[in-house]
Length: 202
Length: 202
Image 1 (tube, rainbow over the protein chains, first blue to last red):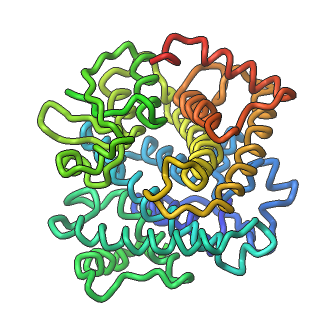
Image 2: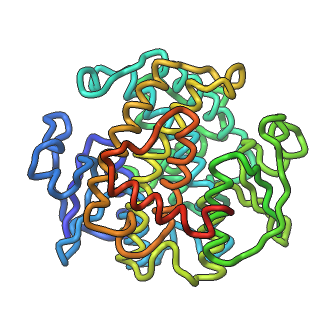
Image 3: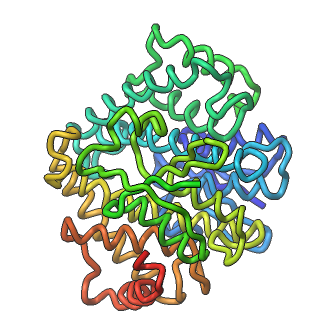
């Protein structure tokens, strides 16, 4: 098994944090997005969409998509459970995780893609849309602060995948100056707690 | 159990198709998005984000997010399996499904949100970004046509959740004139096949 990833990108970080929480070690291969190595034929043969991370299984299958890779490891090694236990809890963790992807990760990524120099010439950028994304992201951080008023973690009283995605997204948001605001005390408390876990440095 | 949904919207349709494939019947309550009923306090008490569908469980829990609802029913009634069976296959179905959401559903929805009159005054629209989404969606349909050259369904030889999302997305794309092109024979063959299933009319 081998994980093709890139240390600087947010999606591979989600998998690294997840694996660290599980205590699973997988050999990694760096694919440098900044040098467009993910657009070279050798990598496109593994994942035609050119996205990272990609997990190479022992049978030669390539599994792309960070969340699909995490789900795969959750099945191989259920403890500690990071997607919840039992049908009801798993569905609620999934709901919270999707909210984190759609409401937090997507607007932060949309701001980066549409305003940052990194994507200049790589993608058609629409800076006006990037600004809409930034406003949306800032509104969602205020909402998330409210959500965290009565709970320790995003999906309840246990650390789950629904904490990994917003931590990675919020840390990534700094590049485009999307930040937790001083009055967002619940969000700041949660961010401190998840950032203090050893997995945050994975 | 009760499903709050809206017949005209694409996300609730994903759940209806899924339930039809499973042969599960759930009483439904219509929440009229066109009349902004999903923005009224009564509905926001069920789902503060105002999105549909929402499943009310028998214990009073509200479960939002169409895919979380589908996963919940998949656990309650595994047959027929629509998320795959076994860790490896489930991960690959999940990968294909995420690709359908990110590469197909998102750009089609992005085009609608940013160009269609329905969202005028409801959301800050950036028509230029809507056009970028349309171009992306059209490229992805060409890619999907290639994907389907050697397989019957999106994730392989069995109908799964990875077929439901792009069928719903492509049908929704017609509103903004995103369509399967005449030369996309594999995609057209697949679309015909999934549309001929009784679940497509759910």
